[in-house]
Length: 559
Ligand code: FBP
Image 1 (tube, rainbow, N blue to C red):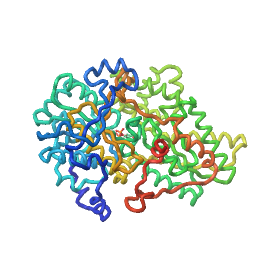
Image 2 (image 1 turned 45 degrees about the vertical axis):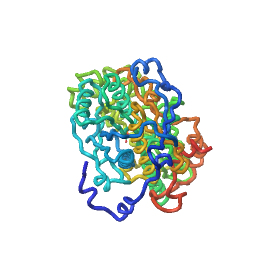
Image 3 (image 1 turned 90 degrees about the horizontal axis):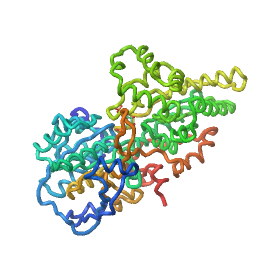
C-alpha cells in the first residue's frame, strides 16, 4: 500500500514500461456517447438453478450485455464516486485494472472519482480507504503487484459486515463498488449485489475476473487475468531447471506449481516447457488413481529413463493434486467438516495431539489414508482453512511427498532387481514468484480493458455483473467488451460443512484441445529430452515473441 520504497527506485526497464500504452477495444476508445448496450436473453445459473434463484431473487436471470457502436442510452451527466477493492491472491495486471477503471471513469465524466479500499474486503468493513488519482497511478501503470491499495481474503458474510459496508459506502457518497477477485471474491460480489438490491440500497456491484489459477473461466470469460504472466514466469523457470538437468544430469526436480484445485497452470507450463512428467489432477480424479498408482506411474518414468542412463528429469505437480486423489479427497472432506465444527480441536496446540484427535474421529478409510502420509504432511493437512473454507494447498508439500514415495518405490524395485538407477530428488514450489511479475503485454492490455469495461458497466447502472472482454485471440481493437451476470456462473457446493452458492471453478477439460495436445506429446517428453526454454517475458520485439497469448487459450479458441 503506497509503498514508497518499491516505487522510488525505478529501473530503466520499469521507466520504459511505465510509458507503455495498453491497447483497448475499439468501441471503448471513441466518444462514450456513441457506446450503446446490447442486451441478450435472460440467463440461468450453470447448475442448481432453483436453489440459486431462490437465494438471488433480485439479481438472478439478468441478460448478458455487450457494448456496441451506437447511441448511448444514458450519457453520464452526474459525477459518480466509485469504490474498488482488490481481493484474494495477487495476479499480474491488477494495477492496470485500477488504471483502466480510473481512466474509463474519467473519460465518462472528468468529475468522477475513484476510492480504493485498503487491504481487501476488510477495508470496506473497517472503512480504510484512499482516493486513487491520476498522479498516484503514474507510478503503478503496467507494474505487477497489488500494492497500490493492498489485498486480503476476508470473506464478507454476516449481516453486520454487510451493514458496515453499506454504512461506510453511503457515508462516502459511493454509488458503485468494483470487486477485483477470483471465484470466491466474485461470489462475495454477487452476494453483496443481491443484498444491496434486496434492501434498496443505491449501490451497484461489478466484479472483475482475476486469478493466476486460470479457474475462473467459462464460455463468457475466456481467461482470468494474471494467468498469462504467471505461467510465463513459471515456464521460464521450468525451462531453466530443464537446462540444469541436461547440464548436471544428477537430479530429478519435482516442481509443485500453484493453481489451487485446477491444473490449468501445470498444463500451460507443460505445454511451454515440455517436462518429463506432468500430473494433471483432473485426470487423476477421472481415473480414480490412488496415491500408490500415481507413485508407480512416476517411478516407472524414472526407471525407464534410468535404463537409458538418464538419471535426471523434471516432474510438474499441480498444487491441488492431493484433493483429487479419491482416498485423499474423502479424507480432506472429513477433515474440513471436522475442523469447521470442533472447538475442542482448536484448543489443542501440540501437533501430535492434533493428529491423535483427528485420527480418532475419522472413518476407517480416511484413517488409513491419513496414516499412510508422513507426519509433516499430516500436520500440513490440519492447518487452518482459508476464510472461504478451502484447504490451503500452497502449504502442503506434495512435491516432497511424491519424492519420498517414488524413492521408496524405487528402493523396492532395486531390491527386486528391476531397477538399477540412481534417484536424487529436489523439490521446488513455483507460486509466489509469479504472482507479482510485471504484466505481459497481453495481461497489461486485458486488465486495462477489464477495468475500463467495469467503468462502463457502472455507468450503465448495472449490478451483479462481471466485467467481460472476449475474442482475445484477435487484436485488442477487435475485442468485445461487456458484462456477464454473476449468478450465471453459480452452483451450490459443500463448504465449511454447509451447502453454499458459489461461482463454479473451471477445471481442466480432459476432452479439451489443450489437454489433448499435451496428452499427444507427453509420451515422447517422458523418455526424450525436449525441454523448451521460453525465456523471460518479452515486452518488446516481434509480435510473435512479445504479443503472445496463453497456449491454453490459443488451443481452446483458435478456429
Ligand atoms: P486467488 O484464487 O485468490 O487468485 O489465489 C491464487 C493463489 O495464488 C493460489 O494459486 C494459491 O493456492 C493461493 O493463492 C495462495 O494463497 P495465499 O496467498 O493466501 O498464500
